[in-house]
Length: 128
Image (cartoon, rainbow, N blue to C red; front, side):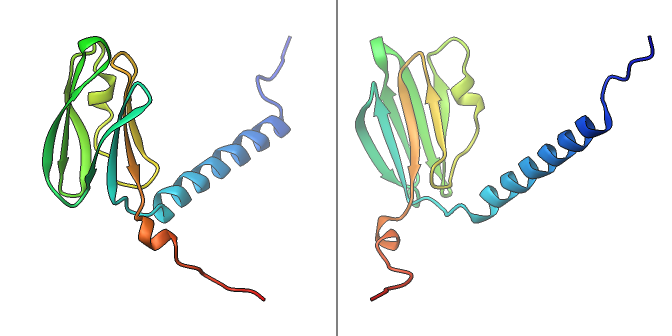
């Protein structure tokens, strides 16, 4: 039995999907706007917000006594420490662009970057 693992059309489809994914990822990273505000939510409720251009350290009281430490520095935000067992939220690194987020599931903490709202209200075109 000499069966090939992939047929010609399978390889073409895989290459096309890989290239399309790469183009989309590059487009997202190039065209996403710089964020202006860090929003901190615990258990679905907003508890704090900070401008990204001001350096600060904030202690976040998480769900059931959990604790996360948020650092905003040089226009970027990240969690420096967390009381959760796996520390995935700490290992996510820095975020700075609108729409990016860091999530700590055990402590129910969400750190989210929002864009500059005053720039979002400008019109590109007015039609009659």
